[in-house]
Length: 406
Image (cartoon, rainbow, N blue to C red; front, side, top):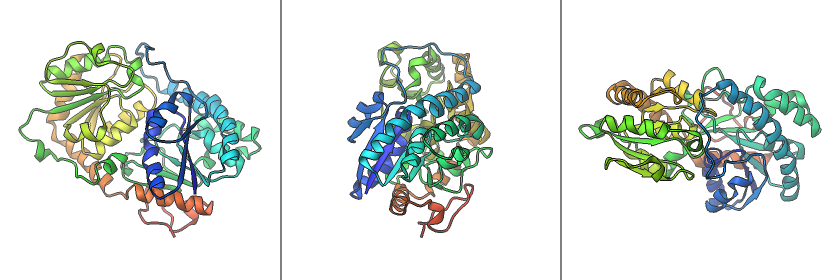
């Protein structure tokens, strides 16, 4: 069978889909990716055939933007106006042509690639989504309903079901179930699977607090792959705080920031552009990050508590959920001082309940079915063209079904 994988953003939208693409490719299916032009090289470098389909523009590697105070309403407007607005419209029209030419059996998209869902509906193809916004909060009717209804109307589709149609067939959720904010429940088509990092580690159990006793704490610092270019001096402030508490520190700067830009660091600090999360997190006692969904979920899947420095996108929602679940502390990235960072790090490291709570979510993640289950679900929807809820015992979003349907 043919599977078209589509995503609308950067690496944080690509990586969560890739584990399922690998499963399907191993099973002998034909997999093609499509994405914005700025991500084509990244996808091709990961070994996939890829077609450009527009819908966004990444910052050039030498671009820098000032750090600004995080603004939840501004992020919701960006989702409304771009992801569900002009970006979705551009992607939908370009994807209609690709879908008609290649005729996949199923479109698999990141959940924010709204244009791919509308295009698939317009061509009469089933589609599935993979959650990339761990805590939720961006797919609400009041944010995306109006622009998506207008786009559906343009393409001859019923506009009134714009939001419900997004996840009509299947929504794969590689997130511990408790992490989803209860104010944004998942649809009946949602099925939970283990976070990808647990697949990368081939079932290796996370290290527990008892394994770490008596050693100098190791802290991983990251601001993701995109936001370092608009983080101002946040790296420097966070690093100064971490050095002051005597931790061993590993920092990844992202592809656009060179380690030299962070200046000279003591021998206790290792600075790299990129390291696999499966490598760095297995030896981490604490993660200090921007609060991106991929980093946060991967850390929690390994029982790592966190200090969060949200700057934009979904990071405010994700950081807020971490605080609600007692797995971390969130700081104001715009105004926090090295002392603020040091105090937060000390509190999380030396208050056992943060790690206990994080390890509880790790246990929850470990108990979920793996990526092979997700691949099975995608095959079933592709084979039948029917929603997963019509293929066997259904489940509510709050109580995940871990059994194969049918």
